[in-house]
Length: 166
Image (cartoon, rainbow, N blue to C red; front, side, top):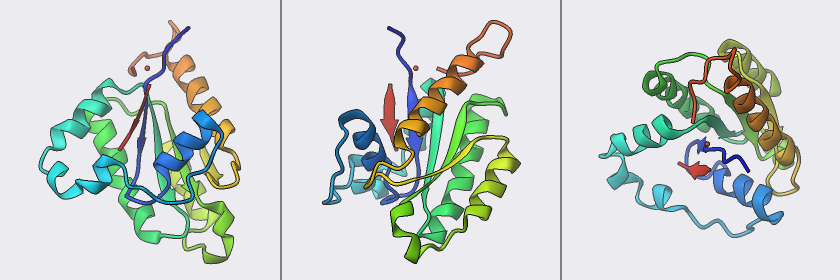
């Protein structure tokens, strides 16, 4: 069985862990328990090379923002730039994800803003909800499709294969 290395990037609290846990176990973690990267953000920021290493070894990238947090949408742009810088390749398998679509009434980032950014980056765009599992399976199926396409002999295999949450 082939192993896929998927790196999930986004600001703290956007739902990276929740999306991953929902996909892997089919359950939603109601109580937010920050992952180590979020918990030790201040210290880890001093070691940017750690994120570079995850990116270097990643084959596909899921860039997550919270659609109820405009700042998290802004924060995703330098993360994509970092991927391109580390991979030294523009066509890296990547998906832009607006999470927390279940909180539609609190939306700060429109569907159109997310879609436009994904078009600018030439990557797929999805809005998801880890809470009610909206488009979660589709998200992971799509990143696998992209990684498989990139790995074809006639494609440029510029990516790597497991799941790292940053």
